[in-house]
Image 1 (cartoon, helix red, strand yellow):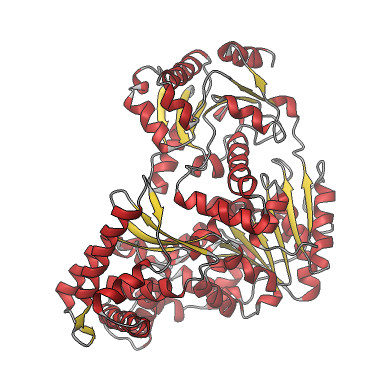
Image 2 (spheres, helix red, strand yellow):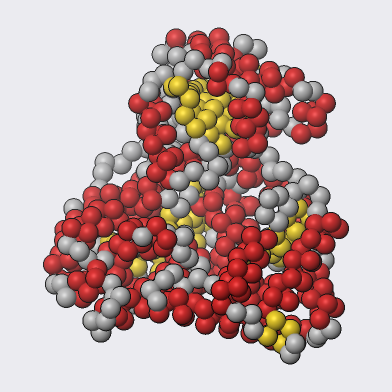
Length: 628
């Protein structure tokens, strides 16, 4: 308790105590803690006592840069009580000075940038042409001055990057050198859940997994993140790039009489065949051996020969990567990616994976990992772990999905904010349920009319959260922007982070304004709107997942494993998305706001939030604010 740097607010003392008890007993804790409970500082205060007494280290994992910034801010306050050294780290895409200055490098994967970095560091050490000038300055500078600055200031990644940039040094390399001296390390999820990066992180920290106390922030994101990090695909665009690379670097044989291009041609044929035979709308499940059997049949080869061909393709691609690296270029080879894909594809466990063909503009073979516990297993080799979010319920689903031991504790702390300051209303005459939209084309028009009426009448900053980009695009096609009188800002699919933040900044400063966004997107889950920056939300439908082949396979897998397929793969994630979206309204104890859900199915979530049927939404919204 002695490390908590503020006067305790409601629930905080119990929250810190629960975390401290779990950590000191080397246990795993699943924690839902509502908005306003101060999860970040409570997690640090609750874990640090054990870390300092037992020579352990705290690894605080975040999804977003803003969350990481908050970790360092709270650590500074704790540092005023007891000296605690902490470091925040991000990937080279954000911290390498060369990447920041060369747009061609920004698309590099962690592995590609690591290889390029190693080459440029070696040249800098030998004072050869093409060496990294930032690394050269780093190894000739006084490291003690850097460490002193970091211990005194506990800078965020951005602050430390500015410090290094002014001195011509590399923040990424210096951060790596600092990690072994830090008690707290704040890092993105990928630093732990990617095996390739995790091992390097442990090396830099100079510890084993058993010395780590892991905090997973915004843990409601972890199951899907863990599935995605273990999934992989081969798309038609990558096949095109392989062919281009073969034009540039040659087309060697990988088996007697069979070249790389022969393989590529046959894979392309099989990709088209899979679309014809198995694709239903977005995707389709293919037989587990569809690709291997097709290749073996086409070339009259055994599975052993196919494995050898895949390995030979990878080796050829690796020579291309090495050649590019030595020339100071991004060491990327699509031929290497092809060989790696074929090796992984053959080695996937059918129990955990479903093999798919996906359609659209860039069709692909995809191996989708249905079991997030595969990627999360290393967490349970750690000394202790804390999994926390404001929207983690149902906790039993989360615990089961990622494989947390059954004897581990689960606790829920409610938000300390006055519940009367947030109201949720819904209408029962509209829905985004697929079958009903097919039968009644007027439903969308009615939803648009509700949206326009609220935006034009209520004179408050309003966020319109759509259940999908498809629905947002339908509204835009219907020219809804011409009907809304206020400025409308927008979260678009694939938007760069700086573009998105500019839209958000403009929305916040353009009162009254309207913001179009998507439930489950970056705005609905990662951005705060305190005060009058956001006072009204309109939720356009319920964000149920599309019932495609991937979703059906996931539901079936969970039904077999847990006997609760629909509850775990549909109801739970939809509930979390709704709660995350509603959570944007109230970020401080002084905030007040109202949400309108345009979907009669809102009543199905009455066990997670209180909502009231509204016959006249605009009047109800105006009355809500009139009474304040």
